[in-house]
Amino acid sequence: MESLYFAFGDVDVYCICEMPDEARALAVSMALNQSGVASAKLTPLIAPETIDAATKVAISFRPPGN
Image 1 (cartoon, one colour):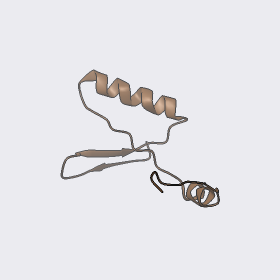
Image 2 (tube, rainbow, N blue to C red):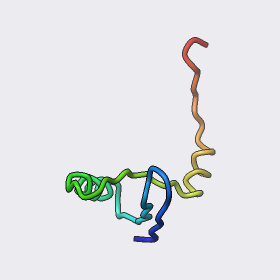
Image 3 (cartoon, helix red, strand yellow):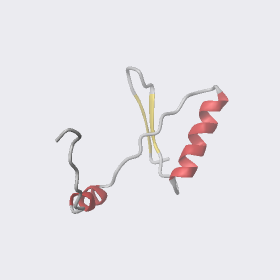
């Protein structure tokens, strides 16, 4: 666990964790949700370096109808 924050609103607790991979993160989330004690929602964070790399990828996209 990197950090833990409490908040007002729809979400009471934010927990920032570093996981070895997505499969383990999903396994932890599913186990917590199945327990009935609490519910978890995953929001993967994207590193700035990944965003920089994505801006350099050429994509050919044409919206439908054009």
